[in-house]
Amino acid sequence: MYVERKAFMLEGKVAVVTGAGRGIGRAIALRLAENKAKVVINYRSSLVQVEELLNRIKEMGGEAAAVKADISIEAEAKSLMEAAVNNFGRIDILVNNAGINRDNLMIRMTEEEFDRVTDVNLKGTFFCMKHGAAAMLRQRSGKIINISSIAGIRGNSGQVNYAAAKAGIIGMTKSAARELAGRGITVNAVAPGYITTDMTNALPEGIREASLACIPMKRFGTVEEVAGVVCFLASEAADYITGHVIQVDGGMGI
Image (cartoon, rainbow, N blue to C red; front, side, top):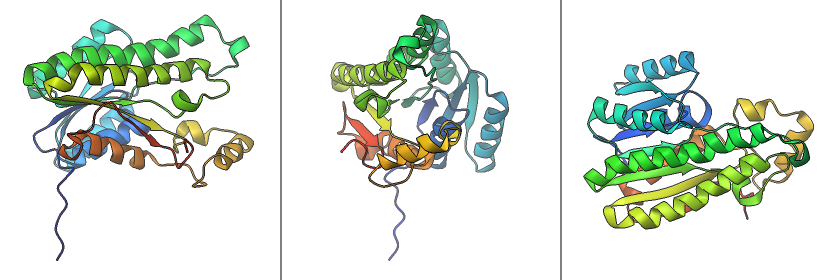
């Protein structure tokens, strides 16, 4: 007899997803909404995509709100968390997905390229964890999921800044997990490998082929596959998991 699986249902939960206008962030916001969470969609510039996502969620009976904020600025990250609480009364799930890249060889990389990537990817994640956790501490419950990258584990040519930021996210995840475990808050990270997005679609064919050769499964992942892991970590099924990094990479990290 068929039994509906409800392990990942998030009814009554409030989720904040940073950088949710496109790509992986959009897929995460949509998956959380499909699983009945109320979603706060953070964006910085992709208003058209955000409006389309809001309409999509509302058409399927979900609840969502959009909040514009540059999470690399602490005051704006704090305002984002306050807006989530003002809209829905609490924060149960925080997904720190917002990120950028400014790729260049190390000897050619400018200070601005290094700083901008670490400001958004690393410092922005810290600001959101800091102020998101403050709301969760009042509830004595919450799930924080940080989006790192396989580049933060293996490194990647031309991405010293990006790899440093993503490796830093892993360190912050483990440290915050230790600090917050006793308060009912779990902190985990997801490290995607090569995922089919606008960024990977723009890669030259030669680089795409070389990238595929490094993946035992011989394909790029999908944004939905990353979103599925995030949804699991946000659910009751992952209540006893904290301080871990789950690689969604087709076996690259083996």
